[in-house]
Amino acid sequence: MSTFRVGVQLHPQATTVERLLDGAVAAEEIGADSVWYWDHFFPLYGDPSASHFEAYTLLAAAAVRTDRVRLGALVTCNSYRNPNLLADMSRTIDHLSGGRFTLGIGSGWFERDYDEYGYEFGTARGRLADLERDLPVIRQRLAALTPPPVGDLPILIGGSGRKVTLRLVAEQATGWNTFGPPEHFAELNAVLDEWCERVGRDPAEIERTVAIEPTDQRWDDYVAAGADHLIVMTSDPFDLDAVARLVDAARS
Image (cartoon, rainbow, N blue to C red):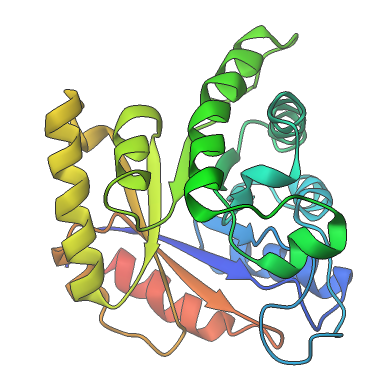
């Protein structure tokens, strides 16, 4: 099996801040390459009134609790923050982490977040158009900030839309994330390669990540389909044993 990177997404619902931060430290200690939280305001499954915490403040805390892993939101909802502010927040977390921040971003989809926090939900097409409009603003603000980011601050776009999202990845991102199963990932990965050819982008410049369940052990299938980075999605009690097994497989 080819070498690949390993990440974990710690779901910030039905848990505590301390367990979320301890989970990031533990993932680093077992050899994970990246730690992610999602960017929502309410639980996505289970008890809708369970405890829940905001992603960017968690990421800032994780940045000072860890030493090596890359950190990011999988993925940030573009609608929730002014793009200039989002760039500044990302740059600041990048400094807190010593250059380990990745700006994962998508167009947003969870209607409860929008309704309860007063954002206009609109349409999927409209939210994608907003993302396309805001990505250059984010890049411009990152370039204008003093001091600039410590690291290269890659931008990863999450999504599976063949016509718009994957085009935006080819045009503007250094990373892309979607979900399994392997055949789904392989199909979308091929579409992304086609978009890279259309826009004149070297496909090797884009890191391909896939989010998987802890029980999904089709690792070699994902890698064969072009995955560079496998991210285990887990809720409290966080299944870091699954992450450790994946780390062992990646190093073998």
